[in-house]
Amino acid sequence: MSSHLLPDTLPSQSTLFAIARIEWQTVALAIVIYGGFFAATWFWQSLPAVVVIATGSWLIAWHGSLQHEVIHGHPTRNQRINDAIGWPPLSLWLPYTIYREGHLTHHRDEHLTDPIEDPESSYFTQAAWEKMGGVGRRLAAWNTTLLGRLTLGPLVMIVSFLVQEAALVLNDDRQRAALWARHAIGVAAVLVWVIGICEVPLWLYLFGFVYGGAALSRLRSYAEHRYANHHDERTAIVENTPLFGLLFLYNNLHVLHHKRPEVPWYRIPLLYRRHRNALIDTNGGLVYDGYLDIARRFLLKPHDDPRHPQHR
Image (cartoon, rainbow, N blue to C red):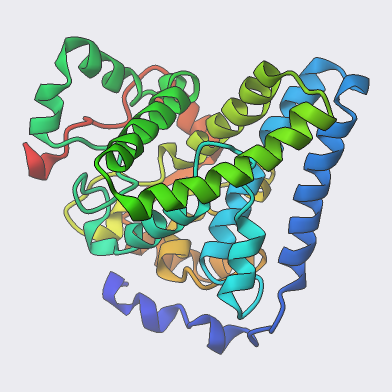
């Protein structure tokens, strides 16, 4: 089956399901995530440290998955309400508005993986690669292994992002400065609750919640995209992972999300099962049998050359 037939093979959501005014499954999910966050920070002293860290990391990563969901028009038909659900900056470092703008740009599939056109690309142009120096190149190469992506990857991602944003603000980008000012208010509110009221140590929140959550999110994104000549073959599928599937709201079935980004998370597994063969044919068979399969292949081996083949 040719990939260009997929839109006919895979009907739009409006054809498959009645579009609800309010998707209560996602509303319930938001209540669970925010309620879990308040509970984990409030009761942290009564829990073993390992439970606090595991729970905190899961909740921050889950909140990132929720933000991704609301970016795509869920759970209501009013995007302002959706944005309000996703806006609270539990991760501290990433403003929701910037995430939303960049991620919607990322969905121009014809530019997937391009380091200039795709804000979520992990590739470098040859010019950027040469400017990094020996240490930077070794760090980037290590970041292409799964172990590197989970350990140093969050630090590289957060620091590089903040440096780029600081350059924009210092270059007198007033719109960006206003966005960060609003974000800072949200960060202050989160820290007042976490540190001021719940008395969670700052180091524990930064490493046990924020960094751990970023690492789990990097696990999801690690093998999502890989350069191929045709853009349909640049998006992967990770099957047989029920626990992480729930954490990532089934974005592990990523090629389906890129084909039908309007489909809500709780509809994805059934839709994938119905059209599995067509989707695998479309993405050229880029399928992994769970995240253990990815670990076996890439724990200490690079997923790909970090230099984009069209920018060398």
